[in-house]
Image (cartoon, rainbow, N blue to C red):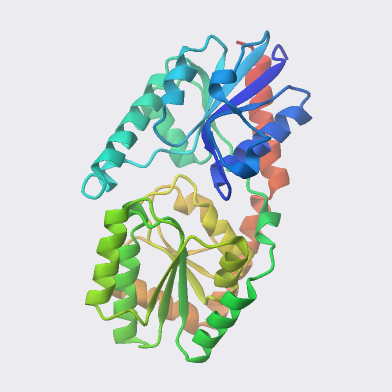
Length: 362
């Protein structure tokens, strides 16, 4: 192997971010392979202050490669492209801008820039590694001549935390009132389509059980979409039925996953979808709209929908919560899928990709 180091470049390294945690796994793996590896960032959270360096402090070294963790538009992409080192791109997908054009035009522009940046890197990158086949197909469309897929590396032990007792107690009191608890975890964002979950709840309450509840956890990437969502909920008279919890701690999130009856994702766009694995870990049956990378992430561990009309989603929820055999089958399939995506396997996959590319040389 001609390389002596593979240093990573990532726009931001912050707590609870799946891409940041993946990058730390890549670093650990590279060091395990006997290579030097540091992480260079534009922004770093205080909890990782000792584990990353600001990119303007980077100094080249003989035999070093650079690897860009790509998921958004960033000035680091241009800096990365101009560096003389051999380059790798690890692609997590950039959300298509059309989802944000109506809600956050400046953010949509950033996504346009991000996708243009990824396409331009095709001309300088030796190889593009995608975390899903869906993402790899995009790399090929962007013009990457050498590509592969290696799944997102997720340390499932991070999900094994104690539930926050206050949140768990509140959710238990909610359950005692009757009706199923429906959960979705993800940023309040147009592409995540939380409005479709609210529509499905309206249909479910009318058709099956007026006591059903929807829990939405996660921060917001669009303030205007969040405001519109709140107005929609109020207009439907659902303040008693929709809990917009916002950002939550790991213990609070564990309580939500363990206090729900079904996990429902109607997202229009996912480059991978790490919360789906957390649902599997916590034994939740999954219903998901079959968009983007979702089908390959869940495998057979979800009831996949090709139509997310409110009545269709409501019927799927009713089927899952009222059929113990189906629920048990989905939960068991989730455990099998988790085993397939176990960290030891995904690390082995990434190691094989890196070894092959690095052995081929610059």
